[in-house]
Image: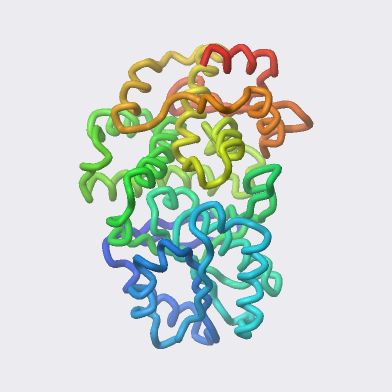
Length: 356
């Protein structure tokens, strides 16, 4: 088991990574919450079928309450958020209760927002079940979606701990592995040229990734996330660099319809576009064709879905959280490991989208 300490301005907390770490949860709860009244597990339909019984067995002494959301981004609606709060209220949770987020990034976002707003905030713990959640479970961003934008209604609310049980990743379908690994690639690009080269040399088949490779990649990604979050918890500065690929990526997700195109695969397309913008606007020296060949071999789509209009995508990008006024801002790279945030004029975007 690896333990990584996350340090933010508001809280320090551990991330436990390894096979079977969910079994350490009862001792943690007993130590940290001696007056614990109730546990609410928030999960989704897919995770509930595969893994919920494993978690309930570990926690049976507390007889947890369970709320099951729809799978994927459908979990992050106002209606589902309201239903989760209703479950908490009807089961008499109080300020000595704890929310456990048991699922992927969408469940984590929903659970954290429920915890942050129930009785003005009760503790929650992340128990991720996807690779993608190595990014989303750390750092305290919690939110639900609005039809006009992804993650636009939310808060910064740190968990008490993250229990990242690698046994729960073994059932992931390949598209979810790809989705999560896109964020690993992003972490390498913004922070660590050596890690990026290691990925290029060692990760050539996401179906055949070893447990050790996965552990090393996830631990490295979490440590990189911590570098940014520890310095800028509420994204007033460098934490925005973690959004490489997300400006266009979120626009693609929204235009395709949430849940119809995975987050990581959309971000990967956005990352390629950001690399091309970086080459044009800030002089990035990088073999983009080699990068595209590599990620294509890993199974990623590398172009914008043809049914999406540039006008709609630019409209979505204007609503991105990094945008100020209507100015669209992108995370770009001066070089691998050296990101910056830069405003990009719409006529340049039109031109580059057409070329792309």
